[in-house]
Image (cartoon, rainbow, N blue to C red; front, top):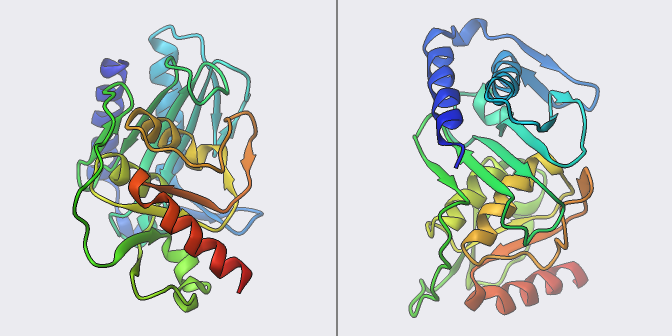
Length: 246
């Protein structure tokens, strides 16, 4: 689904990365103190252009181009994990959702997460539920963002059977979870719709749901969010509630 458009976007991304001079990369700071790079703007413009030229009648709502959040709409974070990207880390991803409705169970909705540094790519159109694991490591591995880790999550008193791993982009983490390469993703912060829409759709295609997200109707979603495999959900929620009440 949308494979021709995605391949064209990927090709243009790699051409851009090959021609960028990292030391001279344009980086600006926005009013909310977050940063935007020339690469963010390039990807946003390119996605909009490619789908327009393919004659899709989608509205467009990107972090860098908040044109319209009316369905059907492309919801895009051109590079989720901009801080990591600007530092040269590979813990970031293009996060693209196509929403026909706010219903998280709407099969027409589509998600694509792509890391141009590692080549990791996952979409929601391959639908298969992840089976329960009969064996787990002694400690449940919970992934959180590096920024949350640096701002105090490293001091949270998780029990010994939980191990916290900082990793950049929420989109990248949700992609890894949906691919079966992770056990649990937690964010204690609110999220913009462009941060999380693609990840939510892709996780749903693999049978992974967040109890905190009922739909995708708003531009901002209130945290915390817990995404994890079904067999771990009860234990993880219990531990997070213990921390919130301690």
